[in-house]
Length: 263
Image (tube, rainbow, N blue to C red; front, side, top):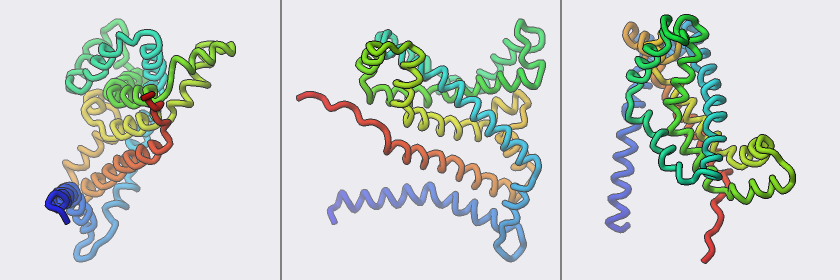
């Protein structure tokens, strides 16, 4: 074994221990709810808690709505910029990066300021309006990841040739988008969708400040008042996130490869 390979294994083991030890400790603690024996009592108490079911269902529905709106917003925009406005790509990339540098608490206070009950569009005056406002907030938070996933998918196909071929056969823009572009970037869209799902499920700031019954605020509430249930919830949330990451790796295997460059 060479020296470089030896140190590579050392750093790999240290990295695995860095991520795995806290998770193993949390999982082991979550099994100690029953004195003297290991049990799944904490998981049973959490899963059968009506508030867990309500908040988790709410966050799943919000995640699905966010994915649909995000796809409808990002895919046509990224396609049109790549096809007709390539000079605007740096501007679009800069705009989609803004949610990474603007804290969610600033965004949500801006929403409350703009859409309170005395504004021209009082979305916070009703539960449905607040849900819509929260959903658009999630779309903004997921925008950097969704846009880059879709842009990577578009980069792997010849957008101009596909568009011209479809137009030569009489296809309109809606047909081109629905039957030509979207199937070719479906794997990239799924990757962005799984990232969006993981972000929405664990989000806390926006849901808490808009007073919506989401999974993030429930996780914080349980963590402040219980001992073993928060550890079980942390393991469940970690499992959901890593399941999304594993699904991204699976669907990435079916992504189209970039066209070979001529020598």
